Amino acid sequence: MRWRRTLLILALLTPGLGVILLMIGSVFYVAVMQSFGYYNLVGEDSFSLEHWEKVLGSKQFSRSLSYSAYIAVVAAIGSVILAYPIAIWLRRPFRGSLAISAVLKAPLFVPGLVASFLFLNVIAFHGVVNQFLMWIGITDEPIRMQNDRGAWGVVFLQLWKNMPFALLLLTGAVQSISDEVLDAARDLGAGSFARFRKVIAPLTVQAMQAALIIIFIGAAGDFAFQVTAGPTNVQSMAQYMVFLKDSFGRWNQAAVVGVSLMILALFGSLILAFISSVVLKSGNKW
Amino acid sequence: MTALRSIDVSKVFEDGFTALADINLSVDPGEFVTLLGPSGCGKTTLLKIFAGFYAPTTGRVEQNGADVTSAPPEKRDTAMCFQSYALFPHLTVAENIEFGPKQNRVDRDERLDRLNELLRQVDLERHREKLPNKLSGGQQQRVALARALAMRPSVVLFDEPLSNLDAKLREQVRREIRGLQRKFGFTAIYVTHDQSEALAMSDRVVVMSGGKVEQIGAPEEVYQRPETAFVADFIGSANLLPFDRVDDHVVETPLGRLTVSNRPDPNARFICWRPEDAEFGVSEGGNIVTSDISERAYQGAYTDLHISVAGAPDQRLHWPGGASCVGQSATFRLPPERIRFVRGEIA
Ligand SMILES: Nc1ncnc2c1ncn2[C@@H]1O[C@H](COP(=O)(O)OP(=O)(O)O)[C@@H](O)[C@H]1O
Ligand SMILES: [Mg+2]
Image 1: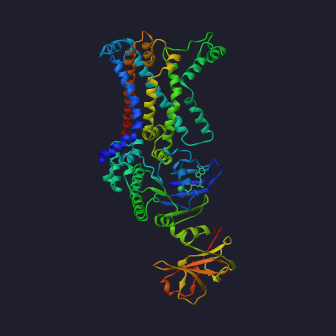
Image 2: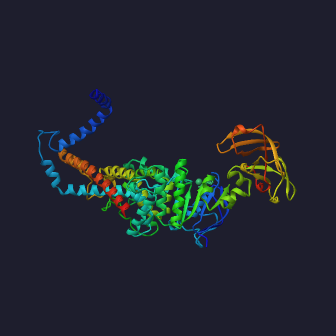
Image 3: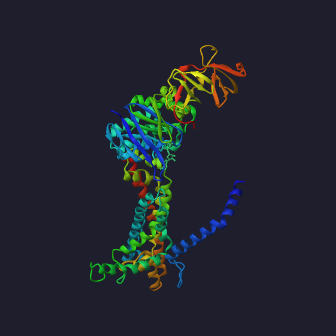
């Protein structure tokens, strides 16, 4: 009887879960196989480590891997750090709080590419910022701000786009903490920072980790912000992948970068989530 | 010196609602004072003003003679026991209890001493590593108590700490709280809407209604000598009747002409007597009342009788015997010294 039940459940799950697994699995499978020399558009299929060797040996790859990792870490941690105080501030409704939280979430509705075009318009040579700086006399010539080498533009865009998402997740979690629990912490001598570190953060750690993971994955794979506003001396992983495919159709090498990006997304986000919970645990001990 | 004192404290919330008006209260060190009143009368608001969560709209709060009106809760020498316990759900029993001492940088040995002593006091040694959601209501209440006491506060503020416990447990925790108070010697301000709790536990009772203090006094005092109709009615059960003054010793009431030994207060609106004040089997000496019985309810130790009175609500009295011994009417005597005069309105 038991195996028939199991079979029935599997059969019922197949239409939904099966399709999802098939789609995820097939993409992953093709990418991995391609990186090892299969699924070639032209030429013979055969197993080879040549593509991995070439890509991993290139300086450009290691630069773009660490660059994407850096952007993803800064975007994830920065968004969460910015979102927490706002979530705590909006914890209890007050006059105008609904409007404020709606405005803060607006970036969620603006596609990334549109946002970065608007951003370029603001900081370009003829953009409002330069016009303003010249008008008040801080500078005589427009300052070059776009595609800065420090990637500040990309970081700004990442935070602008992802902070609202972190806010969305954290607001719900922060609101579920009862007033009396926070009052109790205060009564026992905890100031606002101690209340955050010892009560609010540990009680919202799951939402925080979800935000970190999802933002990390999105930012690690960024293409749009990087292409429009990013530095020109380094490529993000996604950008590098497209570059490999476009120059001489190096599909297999592009696949290597793609698989590496997936590995970065998976392990990077898990490491981030792990570190955050370790940090919080140490906070409770002393 | 007073341990805690409020001077002309009032509280008007942002929405314009006046929750407290002119509260003057002085609490002595080591005293156990209860704030007693119906739900919504401002007890929690006053407690939160003492704890520092609310700033009073007008007036001052003093602790040991020092003005603490604008000190935040984390800087006050008070500890609060919340109605919902408010335990930290992510911390174990021991971590909950150590939260305050850690926050106040009490050194490790001292902290562990306090923890172990308190765990023993509230009988939670076996549960020290458990999370709060693995404990029963009574155990959670005791963790909350231990957590507050671990601060060694000079004042402990209790907000209806027993209201979520069943009757039997309530009795037990009530005794534990008094025991801990005797042991640690803290000053206690205890909020409750349960008059029997207030009478049983307190050195003094502050009876509140609609944001105002009705009467402050020892339990016997507020029970035996209520000053207002509200206090008489809220604590125990009371019979209230309008009266006309005949002279200093005689009043005219719906029960007839009664002799009184207390002088009618010129502001008094009603006379008040308690169901257990009625004396049966006496037919001499004045103040004898005979009336029809409209209802009877056997209560074990006595039978609760309702008698009908023309021009007034039914009066209640306790007949010290079984229901079957009661006829159609009751004859009893009201001793003149038991008749009190009270001010105020009948709710
Ligand atoms: N933050 C607030 N804003 C407006 N009104 C409040 C607030 N807190 C309490 N009140 C009102 O003040 C009154 C007293 O409340 P509370 O002190 O909690 O009463 P109690 O503890 O005696 O039941 C209630 O009518 C309540 O609705
Ligand atoms: Mg209350």
